[in-house]
Length: 298
Image (cartoon, rainbow, N blue to C red; front, side):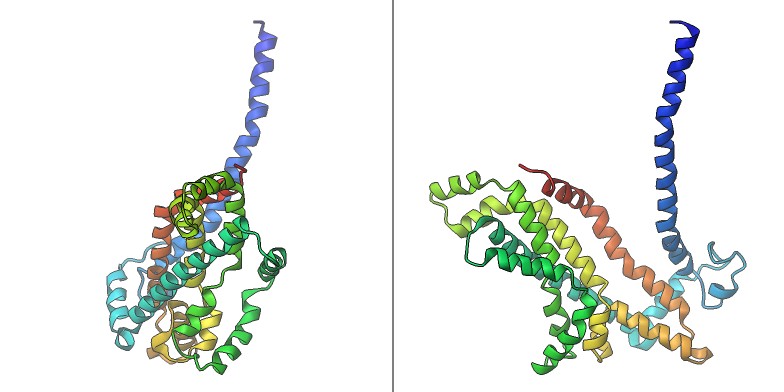
């Protein structure tokens, strides 16, 4: 091989490698964009109230004194430890709402994909239309409805609306249509399996990745729910973390010097994101697998 050919191949290799370098640069920039707020939250949760504003190392690095454990102790005592009550409420809303929304989405999506009934297309189009409506636009009508049936300022005022997940129904319908063969269901029915047994023993194991995906989406939506609880709830003992921390922020902004609790806000916000981080870490493979498998035809 001549020197010219070696030079040509080396040039082609560098040209082909440039797009990969550009991709790495873009990914690094995106990682910095998303991780910097998380890094700031971790740093802020270790600082005292004064250290947040007058730290000697700036806002993006640890202060000379680590006050994380002291902040946790104050979280447990401030207002009689109401923060942990908010944390428990958020767990209740997320888990019960997530399980309920997932169950409804799985059954509805399976029904739309595998059964024929009158009005099927119309009903599914209504669900698709619901995807176009912002959730915040439904808060006031939901409040009026809950007020008419005397459910405001109760756990049900938050739980019942989150049970409806139009995107979950859409995702399960697409997944069942593409990844659950009709021949398998027919074979189970020929063998004498009833509809419920076919659903639970044949369909559900195949739908597991998509179910996990919908479950994660539902939990994250319920965990981050803010506008609806802030409208339908007035009792602080029923607040989720999002609403409770917003009340503390308002108190710190408008209160006297004795009510400056920014250190509790940052520590409480840091604690509140840990469950979601753990959920994504342990269920990531189901998350990715569910989205990928549901997008490929069987």
